[in-house]
Amino acid sequence: MQKDIIINVTITGTRVAILEDGQLAELFVERPEQERMVGDIYKGVVENVIKGMGAAFVDIGHEQNAFLRFSDIGDFFDSYGPILSEDDEDGAYWKAMDQEKARKGVPLVTGQEILVQVAKEPISTKGARVTSEISIPGRFMVLVPGYDHVGVSRKIENFRERKRLKRIAYKIRPKGFGIIIRTAASEKDETVLKADLDNLLRTWEKIEKHAKKEKAPVLVYKEMGMVSSIIRDLFTQDVTRVVVDSRKLNREVMHYLKDVAPHLMPRLEFYKGMKPIFDEFNIEKEINKSLSRKVWLKSGGYIVIDQTEALVAIDVNSGKYVSRGEHEESSLKINLEAVKEISRQLRLRDLGGIIVIDFIDMHDERNKMKVYTELKKELRKDRSKTSISQLSEFGLIEMTRERVRPSLLFDFLETCPVCEGVGYVPSSPTVAAKIEQAIRRLRAQRKERRIQLILHPE
Image (cartoon, rainbow, N blue to C red; front, side, top):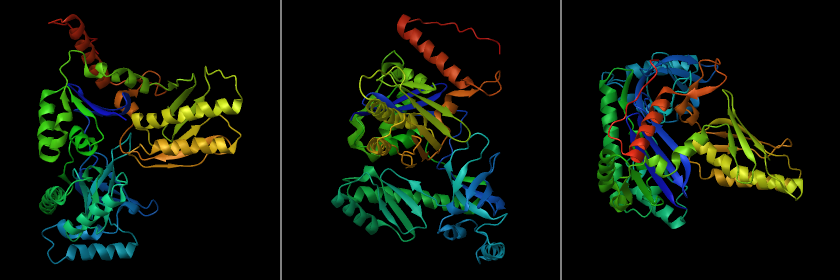
């Protein structure tokens, strides 16, 4: 499979497209007015503890308090205590906190300082979801302070290579830290892995110093920007090329690769064409399709995707498909085709939470199992965690998909102010981006030096 990463930089924001065999599989959008929070680490203050919910709300300095489940506190939470205050040398503050927690039967108390990391972006009216299980990602590994575990990415399937990497990890790992070996570490020697670890340990030292000195709530670590984190996490050996249309960003990526992955530098390309880069790779049309409720299948069938506050509903229909064979046979064919498109749309639209898929009815249990097995197989391509049930007697599959950020719908659209929320219209940043793309197309087609733009006053 050919895998390409296409990066488009404009005045309205940055877009990164992941193509698999020329087809859009994932899309990431970053705009100046949208603050990316996932991965950021804060020294926060517990604002409310709700024992009945098994959760607490933490003030991290934003308008909305962050949400912390007790189950996300982790077994090594207490090990972060000493780094939160340099004035508490005898531990009196933490002893008082422990007594209060024991009295109330909760792991946290109001007013307690806590180190948390953002695990999920704020969505709609909900604040960010945080965890106290801190992890710091590098190019070849993830550092987990407070743990003693060593793990290896499931994508490294070779038994000998997994064993070799695990042996190195245990050898170089300092006491009190866990390590998760990433896919990019495959075939790398101990020197390279140790250099990555040393860099992560220096980052953790800076976080410790910042957390001790600053008064909560405060940001103590800012995760890389979208493009940098994608290059770090996704630009691996299986990527054919990365194409960038910004000279500045191209230089930045080149410098980064020179330090961490010089063998990948020849795969970085600067796009010089006059035609907008997303038009050149047929991405713009795919984005527009992904905002539609209805997605057509090659056979003539189609799927309908509806997002609500509670769940995502996906309906599979036969549409224009005409078959001379049995109903069961044609239903299986459309359902199997729909499975591939549904798994792609889940990644592309970044749909999360509870998802219910209504397949065309089938009576043969073997056919139901084929659809279930194929969906599980396709979902292995997904980096987000998924959980899936088997087909019910009503032809439904219920599944969950980890939601880290708002879906694509909310990146490009906003609630219609006229119909009181029944429909969606393009958001202001989306309209601005479309205008910029239209101007670029005009320049490419007509080579105009000057273009006058006339806008409505509102």
